Image (cartoon, rainbow over all chains, first blue to last red; front, side, top):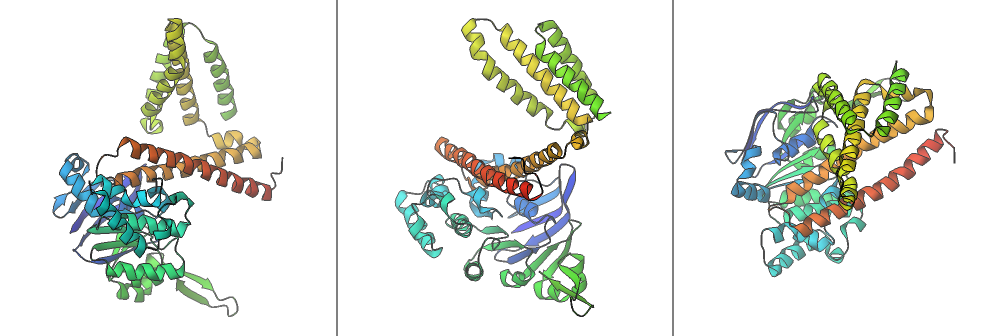
Length: 254
Length: 180
């Protein structure tokens, strides 16, 4: 479904992605792991074609994705409909006067009739526990509710590729569990970024790890990576500290 | 060195602000423009964008007066003055280390650090807002949708600036800046 070939990305003379190559097949649930600043958000933005590789190439369904591709109206329409990104800060995604308008935004752009729009919005609002809030302004919601709303706004379009940037960052443990179950129910391809080791196994079956040097240092099964202490240390996902009472060293992840 | 340059900058700021002759302003404009170009290009990132916005803002304020008084000399003079000051300031901040310049005052250097970090953080959020709109827009947004977007951005930054302001005030108080 997507392929990255030797992709580099730099911003303000700083390299944030270095020599990244991988393929993702349709229906795969991929977890993107890395410490803060390793380039996870940048990679997701690149996959959503909000930024473009400085070097290398990105292909979506066999077509090269570059700035000039978006001058083609059909390509832009198809890509924006099929590929959706949940931002790390959900607040930046919400700008409509009510929760209902927010969820209806993309459907209205696609020219859906109001009854169809209402039907879809009500279905997803119910699934996300947002039904009582449909008339409220999004900025009045709690951060967890905003996170759920932002995700609901993407799912009303039934995207083919869903990119999630730290989707559990603002959720309480109960909502996190609910989200994990929901993600497995969705038929689309999902790439979820996180720096939470304990959650990685729950969010997908394949793992991509970005190292502190912004390169892809692992692509494979999650379980194998989580058992490899050396790789975990290299990725900066483990830390060591002295036992307060015994004096020896103790290593663990986040 | 930094202090001498700062003194020179202040002197030229006052001098340019008091200049009225168009010929002199124009000459200064070309001199500053050439000097800026002689500096490394990397230091002048965003120069033209800033140049354009400064010119537009200046014209927006001075043109109504010129139209009303039927004399465009005033607008041209204001435009040249403002652009000269813009280039002078740019030249100054690209050659002087502001942090060490203000290091004589703890309060001023803290204010500078806070302003710079806020500006950078807000710029990142603003870029995210723009990208989120682009990501969610299948078609080009309509006028009403753009208005909703702008209204939300303004509301967000206003609310955030208030919240951050309160937090910074408390943080500064806890670090000993108790001047109120």
